[in-house]
Amino acid sequence: VEYKIANWLSNNLTMKQLNNSPTVFLSGSTAFWLNALVDVRQVRGGVDQVSQDPSWRQAVWEIREGATTEGTERVLKELKINYIVVHTEQSDEFYHDFKYPEKFGQIPSLEKIYDQEGDVIYEIK
Image 1 (tube, helix red, strand yellow):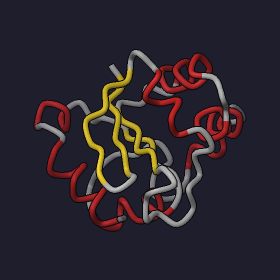
Image 2 (image 1 turned 120 degrees about the vertical axis):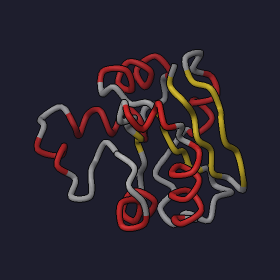
Image 3 (image 1 turned 30 degrees about the vertical axis):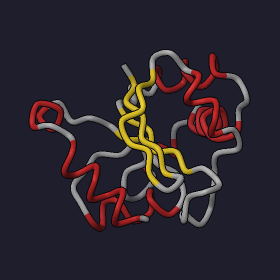
Image 4 (image 1 turned 180 degrees about the vertical axis):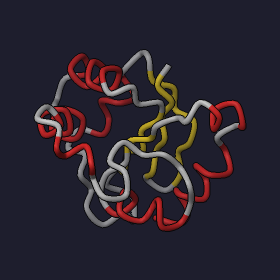
């Protein structure tokens, strides 16, 4: 799953998007492996540099474990995230960090652009 997601992100972000350096939010094993496999900018970076920001823990909790769509949408926009990769229980991803993966489909500013085998990628509009 790590290679599949990394490869898809690398191959499907357009050149215009690459020039603007889109930011992807990933969690779990896909976050760990992304930059070892491809050159795609992620929120955490390869060494989790944003963890030094005092608001980071609350923001990540809201995205992964918060139940409200409003709070999640607010944090995604505050962090200027362009894409989010969500793993449902059907995914082969090991950690399944998202407690309410269905909430992402209910956020109006998110467009589902990939949905295979329990792995879903949304673009934040």
